[in-house]
Image (cartoon, rainbow, N blue to C red):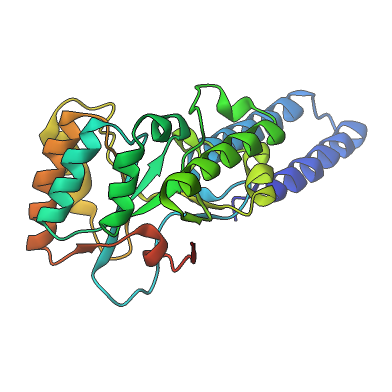
Length: 257
């Protein structure tokens, strides 16, 4: 199993074997370099692939749900484009989860209220979403999480345990902060790349062929491109008899408030 603690143990044991090899055989220091490179490569993979749960438990897909439910999730809002997203979700009778940035909540509290009023859920996506947030200390991350929790509760009267790390990056500090704030780390198993790919058809083709019950789809309610993709995606979902529900319902995570 690819977990940080296991890789650490295997690396230490491997280094001890190399020491023995150097004492009794003609082994060279390059074995240490090889072990270090392998460990570094695996850890880098673990940092950027949230599905691995490399440093701690993460939720990225629901299993054995017995229904044709998936979860559409939207990061980095709320913003004016969120209104169009909400209109489409209402039109097609779908429910979603919005992982909101605290600073965006301060600018668009009425949109957050509408998200909750229309049966969707809101998750925590940090307060600033700064580019180097993954290098913050656990205490700094705890502060970001708490600030956003406070905003969600102030605006909507609700809160829950869902946290999605900015950029999907996890490391020991992220896990420590989430444990301290009693947060479940929520990932995804289908990444649309809607902030990277400009061609709407390509984005849609990344999602639709892979869709099946239990999936969690990552989108961003921050551009007209995603709004356009969403409309086509919802049409395809209806054809496939797939229903989007909030991710806390899909994963059976209890809401507070």
